[in-house]
Image (tube, rainbow, N blue to C red):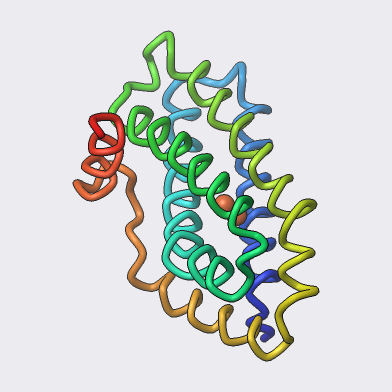
Length: 166
Ligand SMILES: [Fe+2]
Ligand SMILES: [Fe+2]
């Protein structure tokens, strides 16, 4: 199995987009059903954001300083998504705001993944060697094992609150 870091992240994106479509197609379904889909969305996003924050982003920033602006913008986009995820995790699917908040999360993350895939991952691929990308992929696969699965974990909330307060 290839552990190319960009392939790995794009596979995650594909999985996340599939879950987004599942939610969008469930608009007439009961709140409980939509709540279950959102739980899976939050888990997928929490793990994916973690491995990018802990590995891909800092490494790209270090190895390709020219891409620092893209990386910094991406951290901010992750932060917005984190806040929405923490709020959704604490919200009942029966709330009148639940679907609206999920839709905003989907719009934000879709835009973010499009930018990664189209704007700067290709530059990372051009700038780093095959071997470096393989190493990053292997490290991210390892990180996935210990990644948090729920945005409601204290660290995520603390980070969100800290950021708002600072
Ligand atoms: Fe990202
Ligand atoms: Fe991503």
